[in-house]
Amino acid sequence: MKIIKLKEVDSTNEYAKKLIDEGESNFLVIADKQYRGKGRLGRTWLSKPGGLYFSIVLENKFSYIFPILIPILIIKAIDVDAKIKFPNDIVYKGKKLSGILIEHYKDKIIVGIGINVENDLEGLDVAISLKEIKGEVKKEEIFNNFLNLFLEYYKKLLSGEIREEEILKEYKKLSETIGRYVKLTLPNEEVRGTVFDIDFEGISLATEEGIRKFPIGDVKNLR
Ligand code: BTN
Image 1: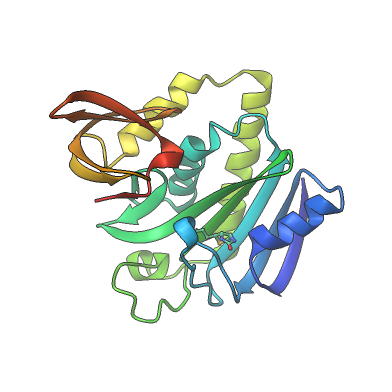
Image 2: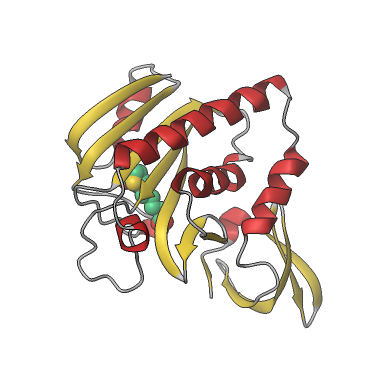
């Protein structure tokens, strides 16, 4: 996989789109900082130096697995007792440590990953950095851990050595959402219920009207 390193960029996801337009695929673009970092649902992602900001571009195969697999690999790479908040936020004691923005562009998938390592979070109370949790940390080391894990798992996915059920099982072990009573915000309604399952297609809730299942992409918010 080709790796492109940048000092500064608007957003590595946006930069990835330009390279896709030029016919590139199977690459990773990483930047020291972003001046227009994008979060999910049109939010911004604060991207000061010291954090990890990168995007991986691949063919669309397995795109349904990435929202479930990537957060597992991030937690392994950072080696912290963190949890996954549905769909794929990485949280530590309720504060956000890492986020994933997956976009489909042309026939490719862009997996954008932001990890708070030792970047200044400007006093943002809902976020936390690895440095605050672990003390000394090196972002190069975290990045290498992640990349090695990603390449290993991707190879296993291609060769069929790893089964989807195993990935789901690991995800569920790390989920802080399963079993919780939540309020889901969907495009046209709000639904309350207890989360009893999550899989590649979506999230299942036990609601007053019975069991209901919602596709991952339909969930605008979960509280
Ligand atoms: C979220 O939790 O809202 C997703 C945050 C994703 C941030 C990363 S940083 C690298 C990539 N480029 C972007 O502009 N966003 C993603």
